[in-house]
Length: 316
Image (cartoon, rainbow, N blue to C red):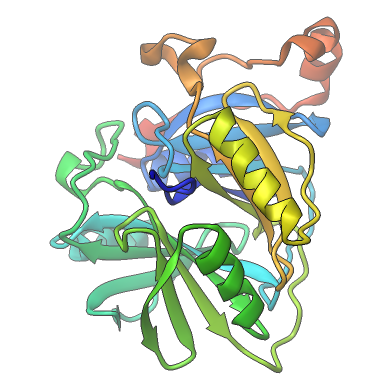
C-alpha cells in the first residue's frame, strides 16, 4: 500500500514589502517565481510561489507579503527554519554570494553528518542551506547562479516545540513519518529520510512562544497524491480527534488544514493539478492570476496591490 503522505509539499511564510520579497527569493536565492496570485482568504494581499522550474511539490516556498507588517519573532509553536537543499560542493559558493549582498551568515554548522549555513531574509525569516549528495533534483536558476549551485528544493523544516511526544505520535502513527535520528534536543523524522521529506523537532521546554508576523512561517504543507488520498487522511485525522477543515480549493492544489499538538499549522495538499493549469510553463509567474470567483473584482484587487516587477538580473 502506497503511503498517503509523501513529504513536504510547500511552506508558506508571512512577509513584508512585496518587491523586496520577490527580489530576495528570485534575485538572491535564484528561485523561480512560478505563480503570482492573491491570498484566497485575504484577496487584497499577494500570494507568491517560488520554486523550481515548474513549481514541483517539495520545492515551493510561498509568501503572503503584507506591506508595512511588523516583524514577528521566532519561538516555540512555530516552524523556525526552512532548510533548502544544495549540492555537497556548493557551500563555499553560497557563503560568498550571501556575503556579497550583505547577508549575515552563521559559521559552518554540521548536523547529522551534513554541513550547512544559517541566515535570515530581509524580514527575519530563518533559512538554512544544507549541502548534501543525496538530491538528484536539477534545481532552477535564472542564469546568475550556475546550475550546479542552484537550490534544488526543500531539504526539510525545523519545528521548535516545548514537547515532542504528541507531535511525534501524529507524524509516526498518522502521517507515514518515522524517527530517523537524534542529536541533543533535535529529533529527525522522515518518510524516506531524503531531502524534501525531513522534519526536525527541536525541544525547548521553557522556550518563549513565537509571535507570528513578517518573517515567520504561517504553515507547512505535506504532500498527498490526489483528492482521494487526501480524503483518506482527513478521515484518519478526524477519527483521532484532530480538528480538520473541509477541503479548500486553492486552484493549483486542494488543501485541508489542522493544528498539530505543538501549535504549528499543518496542511495536507494534493500534488495535482500543479501550476501550469492557467499559464504556459515558459511563462509561469508572469501575470497576476486570480481564481474564477475573484475575476469580477480584478480592477479593484489590482488597484489595491502594490506594483511589483521581476528583476533577477540585478543580482548577477
